[in-house]
Amino acid sequence: MGPYTLYQEKIIECTRWLSLNGFFGSLRGTGGNVSMRVPGEEAFIVTPSTLPYDQLTLEEMCVLDFNKKRIEGKRKPSVESGLHLKVYQCRPDVNAVIHSHQNYASVFAVLNKPIPSLFDEVSLHLGPVIDVIPYALSGSPELTANIGEKLDNGCHGYLLQNHGALTLGSTLEEAWLNVELLEKIAKIYLGALSTGGQPTLLPDDTVNLLKELRKKKLKKA
Ligand SMILES: [Zn+2]
Image 1: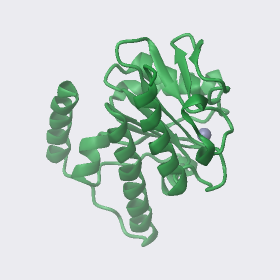
Image 2: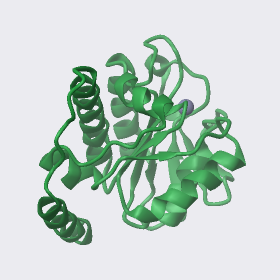
Image 3: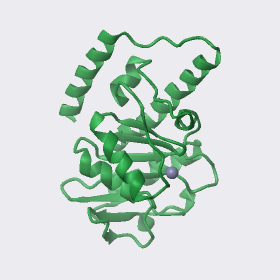
Image 4: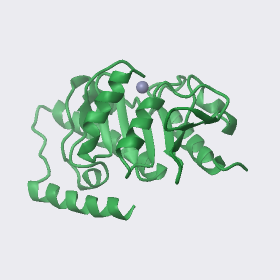
């Protein structure tokens, strides 16, 4: 067993589950990517480029340093590895990153419409708003720069305009749960808007209380 094996196994389990459950947008495609920070090192482990997730093995996983230099792994890293690196550099509270193409969140990504605070549970985990990161081509330095400009809101969920979603966590389990919570809130917000009614938001004092609780939760992590 190598130094990265446990992390690689966790990422493979998460990636296969997300793919099988449609969070990458197509069941047969290779879109979406998952990474984890290597504790105590300026390095991260990320899924490889264009490999069907049911074929993913430990040897296919890419371990990169913060200059994107390969430490381990025989395949080309995900085209979005720069996006993952940007998050680890800007957000010390984040140890796992998931980039998905999930359907309901993508509705708001193409509407360029942030999702506000609608549920206690979602706001506690993801933050008070799921903001939209402006469009730039997949894998481009412009997209990485656009992401860098939004990360200081401290949230754990974002929409990528006309592309998909970005979900963060202090652990992989947390980022994984956040993918599901993001899809839940997007589905319900869309359903509520489609009735023609005006969805009610959480009261401001609840939002402020959740912000405080979230700060304490992140400090402990
Ligand atoms: Zn993508």
